[in-house]
Length: 111
Length: 115
Image (cartoon, rainbow over the protein chains, first blue to last red):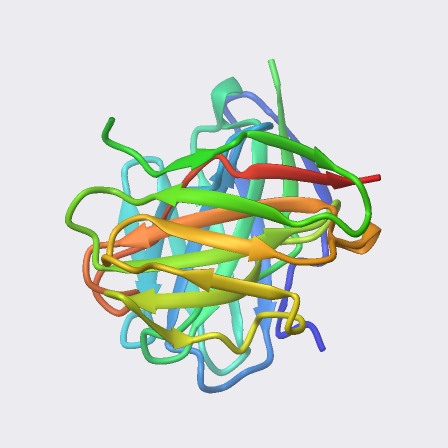
């Protein structure tokens, strides 16, 4: 049972444009959501998080949106840069307990 | 070093052998997590330590897997009688207090291959 789903295994975006990565979850107990970025042969690196009491969190070029009623979150990257090419994982947690990860979306930024 | 350190980076072993994977968390981080990532999947939770004790080991797949953190710092994941299905990247992560207050910081992982 996949509680965190990333339905797009890959995404290609032109440099300078907006990248939008999507994530859906099924467990209504999840109240803390994170995005991680992963380069080959490295561990995932924390990017941005949001708690369920908010619907938006922004950090520089990265913004995460949370729609609790739809159990959906998205990560917006604008403007996209070549160094953003990586695999992005959505993750969720109930009340500070263990993280459950999605299967990842491979983002490719085209110069 | 400032980050989470995992050794070895790669481990090849024969089916049926015993392996140990080591994790050095960020200094001062009390929470330590082990995850396993198979090809094409996201990391899957194995076990979580708060200090020296295992707060949640519900992700360990069976009794061949065991982890310790005797002094509340370094942790070792132990796998007995390895099987080919154990082949994966084993990731360790630490956080300052626990997930509710700080995100997880991951190491680069140990790639385990069971032949």
